[in-house]
Image 1: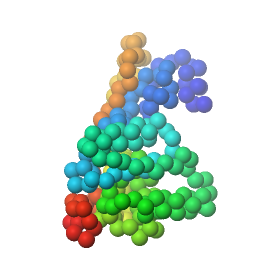
Image 2: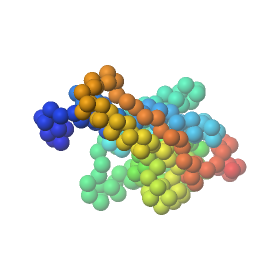
Image 3: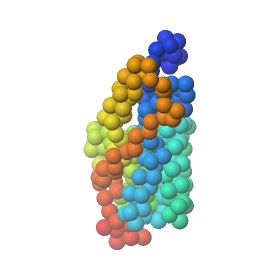
Length: 217
């Protein structure tokens, strides 16, 4: 609705989430494919040979993160499994059911395993599911979120490793593009995608996988 209102004004505008949401508006956003690859490389570097990804919601940006995580893992010669929750729970009883299902999935995974959650919120849900399932983090499941929301990441138990997005640069590049559009410059042919800054490692992935939790360090 907001996008339609903005387009109806026929004024220069810049989309900040995804080029797929408003194809007729130039976009400056996150390089979500690079996000997935960075998370995979972090877990591969820590010695994991089994991988999974947890996606809540069907937003295109989450799908891109999931797909590139899987592709990066496969290029390294490993398989990856997926847990997909299409819609977010609206009431507590739905959230409890979601978490019980997630805990059952976690329990079935072959371990040790590295898991990317497509957002920090999903990462916190993953850590809660591990606790419900009696699965040790990071010895059995190492978790990586996306967004590096410091409040969420540092309050999680253990603290959540996360991919740091470059929101500041996106804001700068979007303002610069809007200024050029207002001056009459033509819109770019392709979206401007900003790569993530890196992985902020915390307790949820702070180990080197060795093939078994008893000797992980």
